[in-house]
Image (cartoon, rainbow, N blue to C red; front, side, top):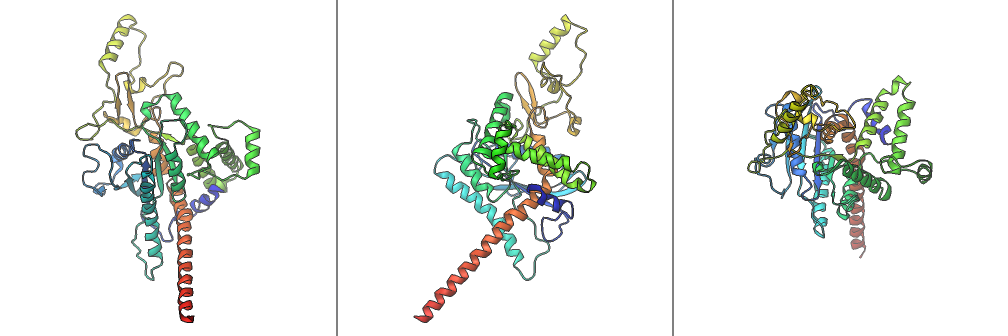
Length: 417
């Protein structure tokens, strides 16, 4: 049900709009509570995409938005660029928003975000009702909303519950846990399980990837097996998707559907994504220079002492940033990435370790980037147009018809009087 709609479109022409676009547009909004790490995430993602940006296409709605000293975001601003991924060029826009406050102010702040999203739909509706349409009009729809969760407890806060319900009715919401470098592995997993249970089971909020279940299916699922990853509903959704994959393994004609199912399974298994941002210079906001193969004095001293006592025991020449993330129970798998050729890296330096933003062993930043820009890009665009825009369009046209009928009735009543 969820991706049969996706697959029918993806297997044919990749058109989320009624007209063909030479360059697909992808617009992502970053939303969440104040202090959750949204602005630094935007800066880190732009820094990560720097090597893929087409020269001369980077634009900021606010001058020096990414190069000034880090401060709280007070107003909407966007950064846009043309990015080349896997040989395909896309127009990518990031919109940063002011953080939500607790209390009564959340109504005003959330209403402003909702109106911004609706306004993009209104632009399309206006364009489509014209006798002569602009063939060069851009797709300004918000295709995804990265919602940064409040991590002060293992369940959704009142602010998150309210915001997720409002946003999920008009945009694809993808939950994110920011500042993950402050969390232990156990804390991360506990937060993920708690958020999944609240979103999918307790509140049934229709975020991106959610499939509404029948009551009979829900009862059978809860009675048949233990919840996977903290949620009975997610367990059922994953089971449905995996069944689709197994049913299509022998059918070559359904390769697209099979691939979409695997993509959605990968997303649900990771969600919510844990990310952290690079360590910035407090004066300029730019990333501090961290060498990939750097060692700290404490580590150098320790290594030298061990070499003196056991000269033949240490033979590994792996970089410190890789070695530090290994655990005694499981040998570390070296992180191979195209960006590994650079001596500098985006990360954070602590007295005991160096952590890298783009290392999948340290957080889900790279998985989230790939999910948005590559693997789920077309799904997000199609879902936005076919589900959210069509819903907005239907509501607005019905509203206009009702208003027209009411105006006609009022006019007739006045004539009769």
